[in-house]
Length: 280
Image (cartoon, rainbow, N blue to C red; front, side):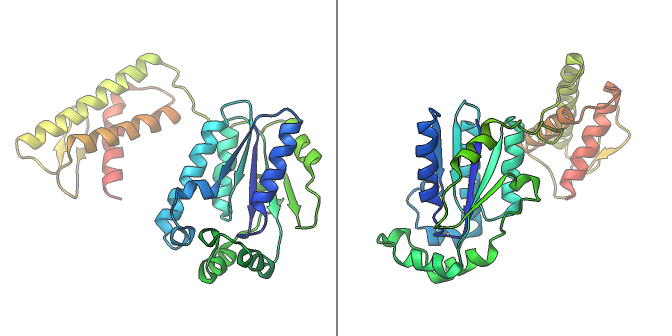
């Protein structure tokens, strides 16, 4: 289950350290999965990815998704990538908490000049960074800090250093995982009947809105049992759009159940939710 996050400048030796860690864990009879940033590119030239923010974000999402699937089993997951955004590392930390597992960060420390030199020595042109992208990634890099809970335990290694494999093993398997909190753990609704009623009432609200559309209403739709009107500034919504918003409301309410479970208040809360989301 444990997660090892490798981080560092481009061409700082992360993949070599990932290979070293994999060999060590396998010698300790652990099942190991290495999730490589290069594999997530899926044949796309890496410079073009890092010059396109949306593509870059998509790659990060792919890596996180693959890691989350593998964390469900009894294995070690090594995430071999730049992981240079501290906000992204925090997301991975929350994911580990949700999976109730431990995590360590291995920072491959190297100077930007040495990293560029290593990049230049790469034989495969497809794997090389151009100067513009390399410098941009170095400038944007947010180094881990052991004082941040999402970067701790932190192991910083220089190119000439021995990788502290035993210490990493101990941190992963002899330390308790941080307990999941409200932000990382689904809280079940206490009453099954309330969940059923909420599903039925919100479906009725959606049906009333669609029925109002059929007779020509667009804004300020009156909902039965609700003192406020449903209003859509951008015009009418389709059935799939309303269904998607309804699912979002149900998911939110499951995570934040009302204390009193007052069924009569559901239409008001749902319409308020709709009006708020559509006014954003």
